[in-house]
Structures are given as C-alpha cells and as structure tokens.
Image (cartoon, rainbow, N blue to C red; front, top):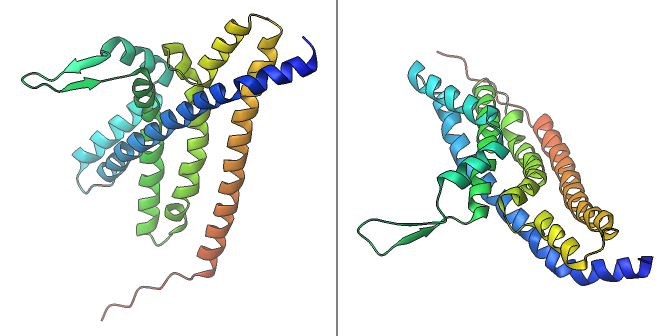
Length: 223
C-alpha cells in the first residue's frame, strides 16, 4: 500500500477513531470523578480523631491502591449484569461496558486521592499550604495516566479507540495497515497527554511562585 493510500485510509477513518477517543475521555472522566469522591472520604477518615475511622480509611486505601484495575474490570464484567430491574418498580438500571471500566479505573484514583489529600491535609494543619495547592496539578497529572490506562477497556468490549482500531484493521483487511493504524492511535494519545502535561507544568510553576511569595501569617501569641 502506497503512502498516499495509507494517508487517505487514515483520514477516512479519522471521525470513527475520534469517536472512540472521546469514549476514552468519557471513561477516564467518570473514573476520576468517582475515584475522587471515594478518595476524599477515605482521606477524611484517615485524618479523623479516633483510631477506628483511621484504620478503616487506611484499609480501603491499601485495597484500592493494590488491586490491579485490569483484573477488576473482568471481575465487574462477570459480576454486574448488562441491565438490572429494580424490584417493585418499572425502573431498569443499565451497566454498559464503559461504566464497568470506569469503576475499575476509579480504584486506582481513590487510592491516589486518599494518599495525596490525606498528606496535604496534615501539611496544611502544620502551616504548609503547598501540598494542598498542588493537588489540582497532581490530580490532572494522574488523569493523564488514567487516559492511557483506559485503552485497556477494549479487552472487555468497550467501544473505545483501540477497539475501533481493531475494527478498522479488520475492515481494511490489509495487515500492512496494522502498524499505521496503531501508530495513528498512539499519535492521538501522545498529542492529548503532551498538551495536558505541558499545561500542568505551567500551572504548577504559577502555584509555586504565588505560594512562595505569599507569607503564611504567624499565629498570635497566647495571652
């Protein structure tokens, strides 16, 4: 296949592949949202005043941090049905594959948020606001990792970019296109993650400069 034909084929399939990449972003966004909420609760438990909530928060943080997300994806596929009728009502809950992938990825996010937010809260109590301020760029940096990890969702049948790459290769029916289709997909991931990473770097430097220039008010002496 000549170079112009390769370029024309990739261009023709670009809208289809772009739709798959949007699904990757959707899965990643849902995982970050759910994981952030759970991790926030765990961080508060770990910073509670009594030992029992602290042990509960630490236990679940360790569980979520050390559970392989790809294994949990298969677990959820086998555990959760595609749809579930709520007893006594006409309501039917749907669990498409992308929601299961998002739930699996949210485990890692929960552990990350619990660790970082918990440490930031401790530092803030001691008068150091920098870790708390850096949560946003750190969180965004972890979002980049989750976007990359979302490509594994194709193994459970999620219609995301890698899954669509496989469809394109099958339809074109030319093994020589395999290299170019996957390379094109990698270019999408690289461009998105590079842009976001550069933006995170700028944000981090701005936050550091502002916090360094803003002195922390000393506590008033007790009378």
